[in-house]
Image 1 (tube, rainbow, N blue to C red):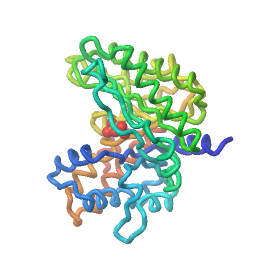
Image 2: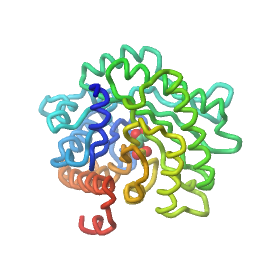
Image 3: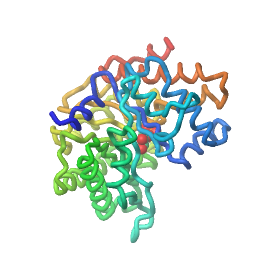
Length: 337
Ligand code: 13P
């Protein structure tokens, strides 16, 4: 097995998943604002160092996606932050896209930028320790959208990114996120997610990306957050797996879901139910940002006195999602915390 495929499989090892800690400068500023903390380089370092030094997190966390600043950032004692992860056997990864911008000719849709110079940046990141990468495309559901133009253009960019990653010996996490904001039904989510993934796998095939060397990071198939009728956990799990069985080739080693604004407990419950149902040829895992971090961010609150409380909250969420990988998560785990 190639090194890159070994890495892809290690990232979805049984009982483990990925922490997405790659918030861009505006996003981390927004998260810090929610706890009334200023987004300075020092505060970002403190917060992320707290997460990365959490004892035992490596039982449930296989890899961490970093932002450009973080992969170069020293901890308080001068150790580079990715080295702290490596020392625990956690694989460092890197966000390499430059964000979603307005799509020319379709102003309510987005296209993700960042291909220019990507080959050189990937080589640099590999030198800094990155063994996997992430690129996020954003698909919005609304009146007459997504258009096929938007889906095809984003899929093309995702495939170009993935092909360059494979060339550089880096596992590409391919992330086409269909946003769940809005009043749309779960049937619409299912339909749009299916269309999106069709485009993505066509483009990956056209651009000769070897599927055993990638991981897919999709949304779950949910009711729009403002839809008056909310599908229950079982229906979400069944529809999500059924959708992927139609469009995700068996050669893909793992599907690592984003949480996308679900509550942290619901994100664990959905993943758990899917693993209980089974029936897919791929590992079903997590690559959560908010659903792994929200309670830790709150418990920390920007204060050095709360570092241990922040780590406890992060460890707990990691443990719950680790259990969800085996279908053994339960509400009782939350109460026992
Ligand atoms: P959320 O789990 O908060 O959606 O973040 C995952 C991610 O990396 C989005 O790109």
